[in-house]
Image (tube, rainbow, N blue to C red; front, side):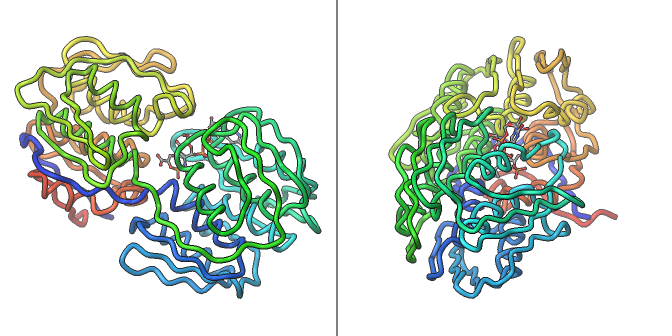
Amino acid sequence: MQQFLVTGGQALHGDVIISGAKNAALPILFASLLSEKPTTISNVPKLKDIETTVKLLQLFGANVNFTDNVVQVDAGPVSNQFAPYDLVKTMRASILALGPLLSRFGQAEVSLPGGCAIGARPVNLHIDGLRKMGADIVVENGYIKAKASRLKGAHIIMEMVSVTGTENLMMAAVLADGVTTIDNAAREPEVVDLAIYLNTMGAKITGAGTDSIVIEGVTSLHGGNHKVLPDRIETGTFLVAAAVSGGDVTCRNADPAELEVVLEKLREAGVDITTGPDWIRANMTGRVLKSVKVKTVPHPGFPTDMQAQFTVLNVVAEGVGMVTETIFENRFMHVPELQRMGAKINLEGNTAVCQHTDKLMAAQVMATDLRASASLVIAGLVAEGTTIVDRIYHIDRGYEQIEDKLKRLGANIERVNAA
Ligand SMILES: CC(=O)N[C@H]1[C@@H](OP(=O)(O)OP(=O)(O)OC[C@H]2O[C@@H](n3ccc(=O)[nH]c3=O)[C@H](O)[C@@H]2O)O[C@H](CO)[C@@H](O)[C@@H]1O
Ligand SMILES: C=C(OP(=O)(O)O)C(=O)O
């Protein structure tokens, strides 16, 4: 098992190149199953979750080539619609195979993904939506078994805003008979990127980015090329690391429009934020970090995937900061680990009340999920001594070459094999 050793005390300085978004690349790769023709997807981050997705696509029978952040998929030969537990358990987003497989082949059997450290994470909305489109679905022995000779367009009102739920139903609707409307749809930039990719292949989707998406079914898709949008959460993570360490970092290949609320919160925290068309600079030199109040909500609100990073920001900042989590019921697993480093945080229901902590102290801490891991690394950057972060396979799910990128900014971080 690998660990990070992070020695605190260096302010981050310089430029960092932002990778393509994991949460856009994943649905887009699964969407390639909808076409019999080859497609090429670029700016795909090299991550554990992407490797898992490639394995799943290959298992279904697709020819996949992944070189230099470009994935070529030929899903023409796909003949198997079974997603086994062994692969699905390592990546919840595997549920995104369900919509495309069912829509193109009339059948799919996908393991239930189950919960994870941040919560129960049910998939009832995916199943309900597909049933509304005429699918016959049973859930037995831990598998979702779905059949439909051809899905039919339907009016689906999502009970709650679900990102992958919206994506799964949008993909399923692309080859359905008739028009599907998804109301109370997720508005995340990754949903928009998926719609752009699908439209490039001949789908007829309008309204992505609003809460009402309309999909006019077509009989087949052609091939196409698509470049995945920049990862807004990776961007936000580096901006927070710059702020917390008192540094000056410019994120390149980034999109400020995707991160408006996060940038607003960083400005409120006293960070000098400047932006250009494809860059964002966070300069903290000679400035005082002030605590902020954040509450996670679906896009365009403050993202839950930035919550753990802002918890650390609030611990280091002057004053009392509040972080309220409304999306997932258990997304504070980083709090006890940060407390082990001396962070003054009180959990009051779904709010973390963070008091300014003069000095964080290095400790051995355990990563529990992807963004919790990022928060521990950021804390390590400012703690006194060398922090050991265990279970960094979580961070490898979602951050491409994080230690190399941090080192280039001056951080003292090493990946080692645990003794
Ligand atoms: C691969 C990917 O894109 N992951 C993101 C996606 O996860 P994911 O798509 O899994 O998250 P959802 O948007 O579906 O979850 C939002 C809320 O809806 C609930 N829910 C969801 C589906 C369902 O069928 N029933 C149900 O009750 C969830 O438990 C949660 O409380 O959006 C989350 C919220 O922005 C992000 O944190 C994840 O990084
Ligand atoms: C929670 C996340 O991912 P996933 O939905 O894949 O678990 C995340 O990206 O922070």
